[in-house]
Each structure stands twice: as C-alpha cells, then as structure tokens.
Image (cartoon, rainbow, N blue to C red; front, side, top):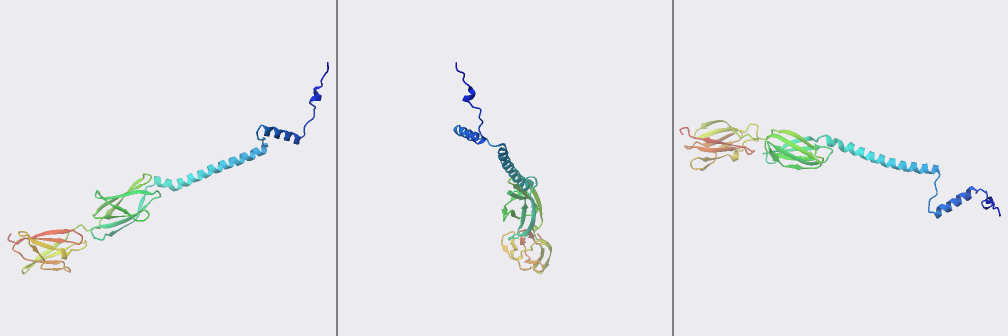
Length: 247
C-alpha cells in the first residue's frame, strides 16, 4: 500500500495579490459579473446619488413654494376695483363707467346690473373694463376668477339727467301766452324740439317765438285747448295742456 501525501498535491504556497486579483477578474468575467467596488468607492457613489435625489426634491419644493407665493393669495383674496371714472356718453343720455380689476388670478367674467337690469360689460386692455349706464341707481359689478372666486362691488350712479323740464311761471302778453321753463341741473331745454297740437283737431302748432337765454317760449292764445310737449336734451320731456280759461 502506498501512502499519498496530499500536501504534495496542493502545495501550501500563497498567491501574491496581483495573481489573486487577476484570477478573481477572470472568474468574474467568465461568470459575467462585475467586480466588487471598494467600500470607499461605494460611499462615493452613494453620496452622488443622494445629492442628486436631494437636489431634485429641493428644486421641486422651490417651484411649489413660488407657485404658492404668487397664486395662493389670489385664491383667498377677492378681486378689487380701482381707477373708477364716469363720463357722459356720446348721446348725453348715459354715462360711461370705466374701471380696472385688481387681482393676481386671471378674470373669467365680469357682469354688471343697475336697478336689476343687466348691462353689457366691454373690455379694453388687460383687466380694464367699461360699461354704459343709462339710469341713476346702484351699479353692481360681479367679478368671477378662473379659480371660482367671486366678489361684488357697488358704485352709486347719480349724474344722469332724468328730470323733465318744469314750468317756472307763465303769463299772457296780448294774444300770446308766455311760458318760462327750466331744466334745473339737467342738460337744458331743447327749445328747437318743442311741439304743440290742438287737442280737438290734432293740428300741429308751432311756437310764436322762443328765447333760450330767458327760458321763454310763446304760443298764440287759442280758443281751444292745445297740448305742448317740452323736451330736454337728454330725452326727458314734459307734456302741458293749455286750455282757455272758460273751458
């Protein structure tokens, strides 16, 4: 029987570090595996990945904060109205009210009504609006933003002439009757548009003369009743019935 010395088959000879690394790389390459990275290199890549992750989250947080800073106030603060002005319209029967809407959130719609009558609102420029108002009263503006926020604003309108001319006095002068008129604080009596007619025949009758400086209009004294229409320059008018004293 022969005794085999196993130490001869596997000699106790250590590999050098270069040989060990070369053999390990050959094995990993054959197994299609990547060599393990040193611990210091692992921490280096982990710090890079963590930095990129935190940078993205920080950028997102900054964007959200800016969006909240610019838009959040508009979602809780109602729109306001400024730069309100009113000027007579071209036909003198209404005023044109101009105003500006102050809000950070875009405006979706602006509506207006006065004395429960809806009015048309026109836009001019960025958040600048105007509306023609044809009567005195409380002008109500309703503003709706794209976020659903709603606010109301009221403007008192009192500058429109809605009063008809009045008779201050009258007297006779021979065969004429003199009628003195006034339109108060209105736009003035339209003397050229004064008309009259006989009530029995509907025959048109023109004034004998008019004196706008004194506010007087003269009609011939008739033996029948006449109806006189006296307008002002704003479309208001008063109708007088002039009847002989014996009727």
